[in-house]
Length: 405
Image (cartoon, rainbow, N blue to C red; front, side):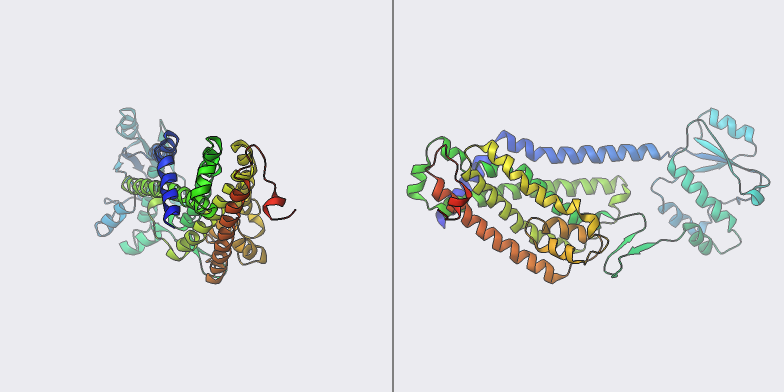
């Protein structure tokens, strides 16, 4: 066992200090930073904090646009509150717009209460926050005869909550929140991490083959110790990537919340679903890594092995292609089958958690299947190494690997 850990430590040190690994480590943080920056830039284009004017010929607006009793809660409801300035005539409002003192001004004609028609004048279209707050203020003042709390509640509108048919999952009408999507993000992160680390996995024994040190290793290590150590080292490399990216994501979320990005406002997590996906993801990753290691031992070149290993990525993403068949009924036979099968279970459970909570027994069955297959894959990789370690330049076919003549 000590030799296995020594192999794992060597494999880890040998790869984490490569320039390619450093670039891979920095790639996702840079991508996240660019994505958040671009999102903040687009959101800044939608809002405009410059004051907005209005000309009220219909006498709808009161002297105090917002009653003092609800002013603090009203302003807190908006990320970018806008000041509204009253003008006695359209001429003075037009002069303020020409002087760039306001971004636009609204006109309520005398017959507004009959036609419900409002005019708006601007040089450049007002920000989304200006439109939204004007209509809310208009509703608030149309309900001026009601108590301020009642008027505020009416102007705020109705908040809908979408529930799944079984009542086990809910989401706001605006769409799934970041916390609700977290299990799916975790599943996709493990799959992409497998894709990015496939080069390390496929070349796990390629260096020993090329520099002719395979004979020395064969005399001091058992195949299971060598292959098991390399797989543990590769898993440790991948976890280093995952933890580093997780730290960057947490930092990005913190920055996004401080910057007022609405999507990060609700970060509540259902830890049952998160732990279910993580519990499946770890043995699923070990399974794929062990099988790719076995392929790397069987083939003669790394390029050939990488082309064959592409089938694993297709199997992991298979639930995305057939999602239409089971997402309408997350508890169908197809959904349950894909949730327990190797390769497909990770993405399927992550997707099903958007609409319902996957039963614990299905998660347990999936974990047992994944662990059993992972152990078998490690044994298969060590057997492939034992049979093919001296076959330089020769391919070890599947018939020989399974012990058939």
